[in-house]
Amino acid sequence: MRIELATEPGDPQRPNEDYASVALPAFGQGGVLVLLDGVTPPAEDYGCVHTVPWFTARLGGALLELSVSRRDMTLAEVLAAAISRTAEDHRDTCDLSHVRTPQATVVAARWSEDTVEHLVLSDSVLLLERADGSVHPVLDPRLDELPPAVRAQRAAVRALPRGSAERAAAGRAYARAVEALRNAEGGFFTAAADPSVAARAVTGSTPRAEVRSLTALTDGAGRWVEVFRLGSWTDCVEMVAERGPQSLIDRVRAAEAADPECGTHPRGKARDDAAVIHVAP
Image (cartoon, rainbow, N blue to C red; front, side, top):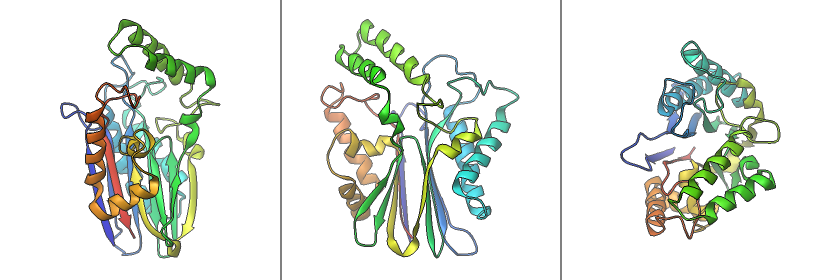
């Protein structure tokens, strides 16, 4: 079995809000990977005394432990339990109903001798490499399917000069529009304090014999494909398999550095936290 992972903050002066981990149970059958991308709140009150890294560490740790110890539960059930456990850790001190309460995107995969299970919630991605070399991206498309009016707001923000007061004001209005769609019907879902969102995750299973490798990416790493268009998902898996996860992050950093003002490749952050896990089970 081959296991490699790499993660790097977008800004060295700020904590990394991504979480990446792999566990191999002591009984020697199968394993689990968990990847989270913490949602960065605006520089305003978000109802919680804790940081996003505090939240991702606890949610990720609970999800990893329960995925290993409770193989009788589906990954969606495990995620629901992990969300509930994490919420109890700060329910008495924080306003968990706040729309900006700490939250994260989720990728989880669990494999046994017979089956590979997967779960994806929001805009991180899991790449399943089949035995024949083909690559199947497991994606939750809802964040990319925002209502036309909200997509038009995003386009209007990107058309304004970076650093201008007009862009800042339009950006705040766009952020409020997106927030209204988070964890709401007709919108998109992240893991925050409500365990019921686990039922909204994209889930499935594949026979173990049909899977050559698993590659999990936060969107900060996946932008090599989705934002910079430097290769396909198949190219991405081939690079990570041949050169390691850090090679993908390094190429993303080079692409970000070549477009520091986000003019050629519009994106929410010039540089983003990035995490990659690669497993050949």
